[in-house]
Length: 93
Image 1 (cartoon, rainbow, N blue to C red):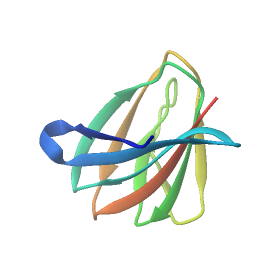
Image 2: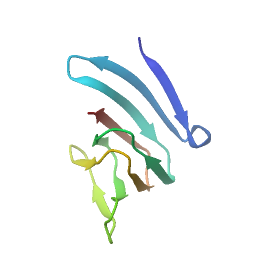
Image 3: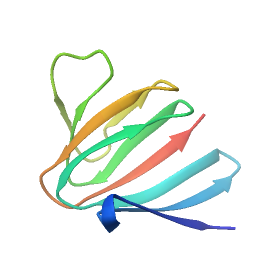
Image 4: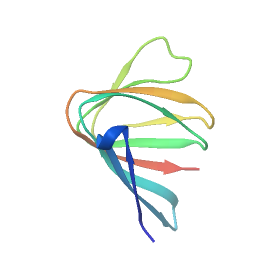
């Protein structure tokens, strides 16, 4: 069954799914700045748009565009800046 998630007063929305590759979400983010926490390892791939990311322990921000992936370890927090509406795929391990 699919489930819908909504965060940051509706500015981030995703649909969760589970298939042979495991658990994932496909979602969209509106313009803004966000901080997320992880409970598992997360593989975040940008589908459309750009995510500007500050990973745990990193001193600098880095931009990720379409088809680029970043990985966040379990039990960490990471920050995002979104300058244009952006779509993503997040796979959990």
